[in-house]
Amino acid sequence: GTVLGFMGLTWEFRGAVKIGDTIHVAAAVEELKPMPRLGGGYVTFTVGSDVFTATLTNGIAVAQRANLVVGNHPVAATYAGDNSFNGSTTTGADLLIQAILTTGKDGNGAGTVTTDPAGIDCGIACVTRFDPNTIITLTATPPVSSTFVGWSGDAGGTTNPLTVTLNGDKAITATFTLKTYVITPTAGANGSITPSTPQTVNYGDDQVLTIAADQHYHIIQVAVDGASVGALDVYTFTS
Image (cartoon, rainbow, N blue to C red; front, top):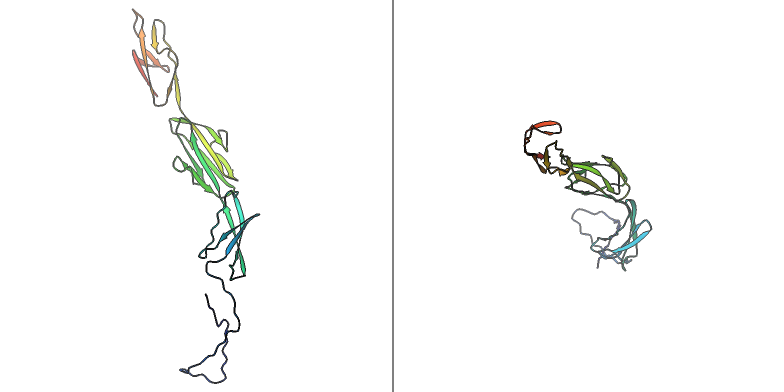
């Protein structure tokens, strides 16, 4: 057990006490008070209307609670002693639940999503936390090969940059598509181009066109977007 004696003891001498004197004391126990055992008892946590308890072990009480909404929650913790201690004490604090912003990318194109304030740089870091009601600006940035199409999830539209208020957890996806080009072959009289129908070509891909003159004719010139590239029988379109 734990013994704690002589609390608030006052000495009164009726004669002179000199340095080196020996003082003899006769003491008697007049009152016994129970003391708390180390590590005993439990703590009651109150978060709003939610009340739950945790056992105190080695001076520490650990409690977990899921599904707390985003925001600031006053928390009260009340310690109640074990069987050898009938007292209790209450302390308080504020528990801040931050909002989680999750970003993603969709589509066959490439691009990044960033935030201001900093925290998101997706594709590297696509999930982070911000204080409740933080105003976030999301920016979708495609490379030269792609086009930003729009937002989906907890946001919509094509506004870029996009401003959102994090009044709760949000998941927002940016869609990027790969750029495409349409090549429309047109042959003059007495000749042909193969393929002869419009061709859709993805950015970075090539398309070979074969130009042929009919019998007894020859190619005078090949023009691309109105500009002559010479009298070619094969032209490769590079996007």
